[in-house]
Length: 370
Image (cartoon, helix red, strand yellow):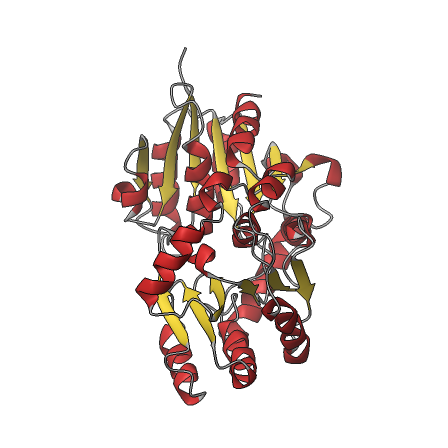
């Protein structure tokens, strides 16, 4: 029997979407499913974390905005490969040309998958323009251009589909994790803290994500500056990298926090750093879901997150969703400073809520074959 061939359209850089796809692909039957990628991300083909998996990458040399005719020619060439499904991973609408070309090519299953609730653009004027365009396209998108509508949260579904797609047609797909990987380990905690030069008695706060407008690290640093004044033994770990690194580093310097805030860049072993933390923070301006919160819960951490993070992350009483106001965050951190309590049951909480990737990989297999 021939494998089910799925072509994924993914964003230009590395991030949560490719992590979502490959974490599920690892636990799927690769004799029955074959993943291929249509992307501007030139590094995906030889990406170190995914080398053990079998997949093909079709590069996108131009976008439709740069060269519409060239783009269409390239897409038609790729679509000749008789795919069983086209899986479009979408943050916001810029057009629906791919859906039209997929229909023309007779691809039987076209999935539009909502992964966000906003536009990650720091320039306010450009952001407003992109949001306006997004809303215009959303209003004229025809429901018959796709066969399946998925979203990582109810909030993401509303952002991308609005009233155009009935709720009955939208499936909420859980952004699952390799839950066991995040189980709390006291020996790893000691090792990581020792490597970072952090005292075993220090109160360690942390976050993970791209250093961008969306993740709102500037709020986090301002808030931590106030918290640190009364908790001199506190430290802030920031995992991730991005376009805001230089400005955030300067913000840390101006607040006199050099040595108290650690920028650690991208890490493949996020679970080890979560183990070393005492509280996880996510002050996002918007989130499609916030999978890193589920990872933090699995590690047994109390989590303080922005109210803009969808309510689906509240799988534990340790998750606190509050407005982006410094006094409220300081109060929440004072509670965390009293002790994070028992941490070993976090994995069971994630599994019970349906966020174990082994479970969700089977769901994905069934949907691709349907």
